[in-house]
Image (cartoon, rainbow, N blue to C red; front, side, top):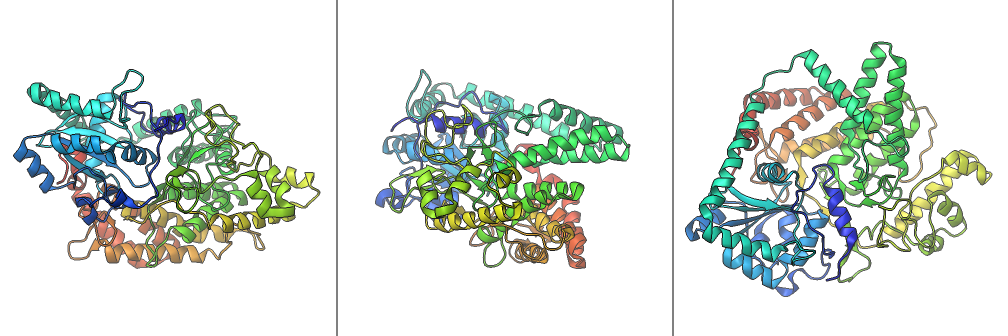
Length: 611
């Protein structure tokens, strides 16, 4: 298969939030097939699973097992190592490794002959992912997905990495070579291999135990840590394009939340100059994000990250946990500034979720993929196909308003992914455009001799037309798994929006993809999602949560983040909706969380994954 350096760039970018290990290699670019699964192959064990990610691998020639006793017992009986592969259904590089290696008959034969192969959905089993990601990150300086780990039959890690290309390239070993080396080491140096893994595990367990046993941090120490964090963020601030750090740029709402917290502290201390400096960083960052291609201007919501420094060309997957947190930051900024710009972006995100990410019973789905087919029946999927435009497509769709729209969103016949050397260095998007706003709408309205309202009205009508055209394209894969923690983040945003957005001035105009609904409708969304979790993912007799749901609750129990984010969501539902039932349930869950944190977080503390 042909090499595509764009995939390498995305893999490097994916490591920005957890820098990749030295075992990352140049990627051979090939996205998932949109043809019939498996080419008629007999399905493997994963066909009986509910996870969308595991089902994607159900027709691989690899003799996959789900995580569980059957696989462990086979490894012990045959006394052979386990090959563990962890990813998720909207992971671009997981798709690449599947096509290159797991659909390859030669690779499958090696795996089937020498290893017990286990496939894990990290979103379904975050406990398992946490254990082995911690190992790989500690050993090699970073991690990412797909996560590749070799284990002894007693589940102790032997070695690991992330993405491996199938063949040796540029003097570095490919996946087939790695498999042969692990097999050789297991046969000839097993004791040293297992001892090395045990040493790392013991060191990690000691470190994590020390952290877990640490008591409450004194207030003065907590303040010091916050100040140090703010100082570090401020030193990495990008005054030109906003954000903290360089490319690739992830929307990391927690950073903005910390800065807003410090802003409030400065204001309480009447340190207005310092406060305004911080607010300028936050507002400039949020404006650049919303104007950039990392924001889906046509359909709403945000993509996972930008591969360049100017928030332009994104990695196109959309994750629920991003939407909930980003919406809350825009709501917070609206509360502080009173600027309708931020409330409009919050509505944009929430309306995207309402339109595309909510099931019939109110459950909120997990993610949308980056890859999709360019046309029905295309043999391969490509990243961004659903979202990018040619200049001709826009002209054909928008007619007389095409020129205005193209100027506003920097659309060019040659393609517009040219704002940075990192945006598209190998012309993967030649002739294609990722919409980005480079000039203020008020300035552009004046250029066309129109009022701002009239100008924005035209843009909204254009986006609606493009949305209708785009809706006829093959859609990216939807991961319709329901995760409690991620739903909690979204429920909080919907609940808060239901009251915060009521403060907007009467007669406010909204433009597609913003629906402009009565904010009370957001509360209804939040309550329906919370009711789904209570009915489907909560055991009233034991008062405990399940972690996720798809065609029934998953085997994994609720984890610490499930309890924490759901409790926070229930408190927001009570605060902004007023129903006492949400407060009572939050108290119930808090009792469980407080009394059993050592169980909920067992994998991190004891480094023993739950079977």
